[in-house]
Length: 219
Ligand code: CTP
Image 1 (cartoon, rainbow, N blue to C red):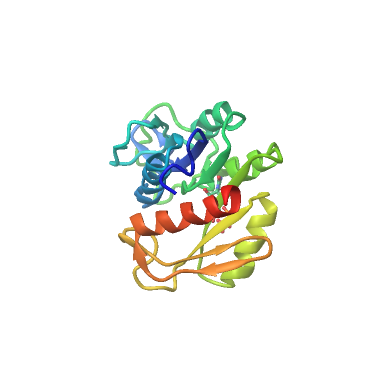
Image 2 (image 1 turned 90 degrees about the vertical axis):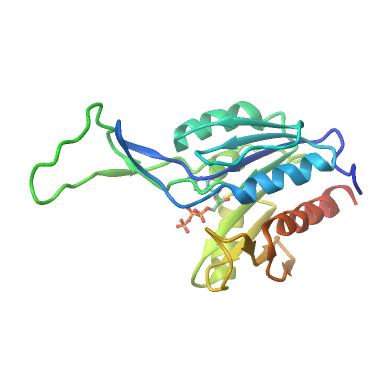
């Protein structure tokens, strides 16, 4: 059990991404990176070598088998992940990647002018979906979904669209779940199985996720 991931290579994305508007401003979100870092620790404690590609967070990895690559934008996260994906056995996409970025990042600070300012946004690369197209038979991928409506069917759609083997659904309708909480209530959806868990500390949620991945891969 302890060493069930011995010799396995795990790639994890974590935290938010910041998309530059100008040199002093960005579009971001409230992701803390806690879930991704907790997963990294958990895999490492069980013998895995972990590559953690993290957007801006205050989190620090503890375990010597967790190697962190710091990135800022979705494009940087994608570049870092692409370098590591082929040599990883398991991919976990825990980052809250900004869906859109400013079409142009101004190279000078934008000065205030009229009463309105319009920012043109363009879609960011979907890292999980792009990698999903490259996934080999011997690789296993896990995504996250944060939903408010039609939770299971939306999550299931993402599972298929991004070619994931497992998707961890966080319901925003559950008090104590999601951003800014130390607790989470998850449901894990696979192609033909759904497993619901109680509200727990994020570190315990990480154990549940890693346990189930271990069961599917190495039981
Ligand atoms: N994800 C990603 N790259 C993106 C957006 C999302 O890798 N540009 C990953 C997340 O890390 C997560 C999963 O995809 O594992 C689901 O992300 P989510 O933002 O909930 O899904 P979207 O497909 O962006 O759908 P929507 O925001 O419309 O709900």
